[in-house]
Length: 328
View 1 (cartoon, rainbow, N blue to C red):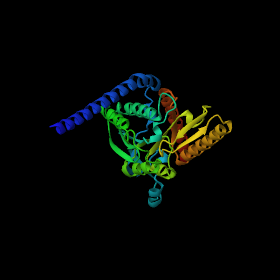
View 2: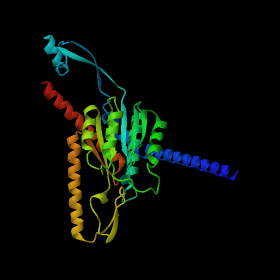
View 3: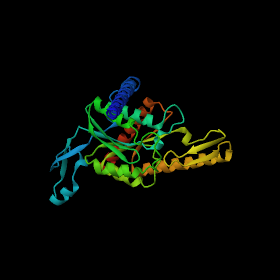
View 4: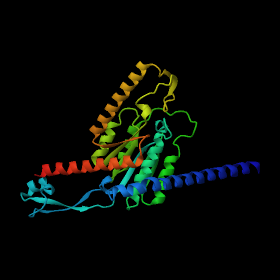
């Protein structure tokens, strides 16, 4: 009887914990809707469409070229075979799926101020997912902790956004667990490439503190999908203040090292190495052909998303100009 009571109590505790977590996620989303999304509604004025360009155009048919047809749609292979100009006819696929490829490894728990990188990640995902689902678009997610922990198929609706945020809130590793080693972002990107078959818009949300080798899988993703990198950071990762002798701990490996931050030479070397890492990371993202939103724990989320939409506008205009040059 006592054993059964312990089991029942444990089950009740788990249920209460789940209900509390769900209530916390509901409060967090409601707070985002009131403090962020309402401000964005006034600023973007329908420009959420600029954030995503949809799944694109599906090839429906081929027909002979007619006067006033867009020369960019000429199929040169068919034209060469038939010796008559033919154009591709497209139908617009308005339904769009967006995927969040989420790095929730231990380094994302870091934050030198009141907010950690994990919190700004959840805020960004909650806002963008809600903006998209309000207009009928579907969102899904791949959640990575020490490995791929969950795959959330794309759906629409506010309840689904809550489910996604709740999945982010659950830690991939239990609290107090030993560090699981270096993040292997390449595994997550490879999984995304294997699982997401239909052309989609993919947000890779990560601090990109990972074992090397993620650049090629990211580049392969861009060949099929529109990929957008959301890079999480904290000011303390770029510059150390003068705090005297302090312990620095690698959040992922658990390795600890005492350093003297009062040493000006050490702080200068830290800044130089951090700058070199920043340059290398930005060059790697640029080579992969992805737009990047830099999202710091100090940033205002509204300003960051508006900045991101402006970035998307410039990219779309640049692509349009390039297409005109090719077609002329």
